[in-house]
Length: 214
Image (cartoon, rainbow, N blue to C red; front, side, top):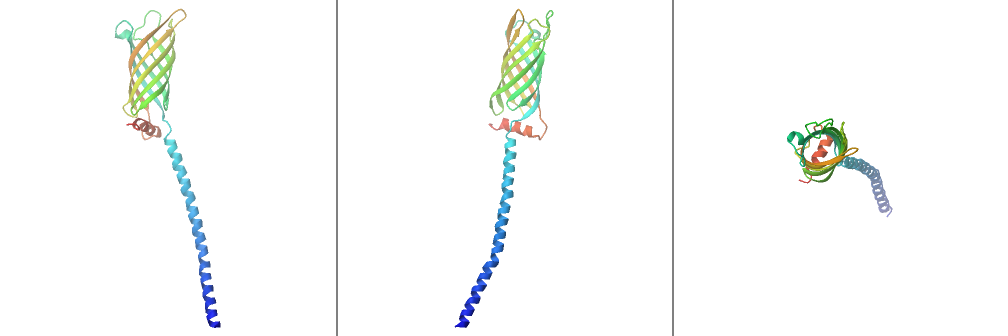
């Protein structure tokens, strides 16, 4: 009987010892698994952060060449044509530009036709490569009796690519002086080049903006 009891006691001890030796590895595996989870969470956070940066609106410089024709004025093409060049910067849907040009291709009397204008523009609607924009400008007509110039216009724009866009414009010029004022309406065409570096983040954002709804 003592022999049987002794054998049972030895078996119980062996089992307890075997279970005790497995505690260390189990604890080690638990720590390892928890440790491996932490870097994974950190990696996901980085990916989400990068994704949020990619969703920001593009910012870049642009150069636009405009050719407007007054539709309620008398005279030939030279008197009714109003060329201009605008340079500015785009902040997503908002443009801030500085334009210079002539109200017509001819000068009359002591008045000049050259002007400089501050021209902010905002995109009020966009669908794929098409967009509609509204501009409100203010400037000065050099050495003119009606020197204060303001402008309101809207345009329909088409992005040929990330860097090239064309637009059809329509708007009004208002000229004010000390004793007189006048207004005129125009229709025009604009060609815009966007200064975007190849493979840049802003070019990727611009591409995403014009193809997202196609």
